[in-house]
Amino acid sequence: MKLYGRPQSGYTKKVRIGLAEKGRLEQVPLVVVSREESRKAAHRARHPLGLVPVLEHDGRYLAESTAILVYLDAVHPEPPLLPVDAWQRAEAFGWDRYADQALTPPVRTMMFRDERGDDAPMIQAAQAEIRAVFDHLDHSLADKDFLVGDAFSLADLAFVARLQLFPKIQFPLPDELEHVVAWRDRLAERPSWTATG
Image 1 (cartoon, rainbow, N blue to C red):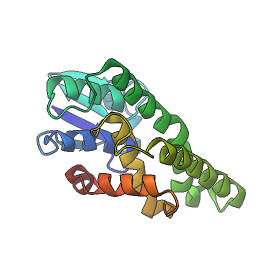
Image 2: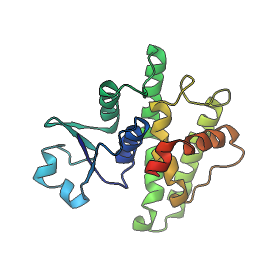
Image 3: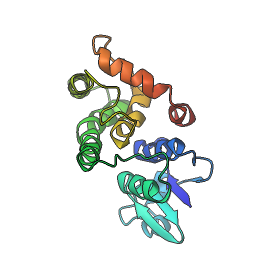
Image 4: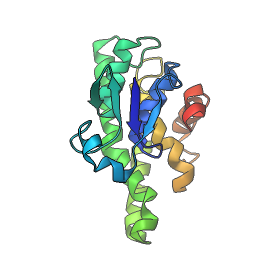
């Protein structure tokens, strides 16, 4: 088993966090695929769009971070990343999709702002979008330690890679979002954060 990706890719990092949670980070090597290499036929044979991450297992290729994590959870079920309860499982997928749709675009804007030039209105809009996501999360975490059920799951994992980038994008979590700050602190104490941060 090996993982094709880029260390700076949030989705590659997401899979590596899942591997770390399962104690398998060292057993699944990361094969770095540069942006240039991702456009070549060798990588397009793994993923027709040339995207990362891609998991290779027994000569087969599986793309997309969430699909990879679902597979890893099936072949290495302990500790689980997906709840057993059907409703909670669906909620975890919902949070994962929310992170992709609501948080990833403004974080990318902040990450690549130097390449795009100093566009103050665009940066302010991205910061407002990020703040709106964490306002929602703060409300959702008001009476619980994790987003779904009483344990760390795909729902929480979906946000870890982006949270790890906050120092780089210079976005401090506001102190008044006390539930989110406490949740982030709990996530940062996990060995998977240290191993992939």
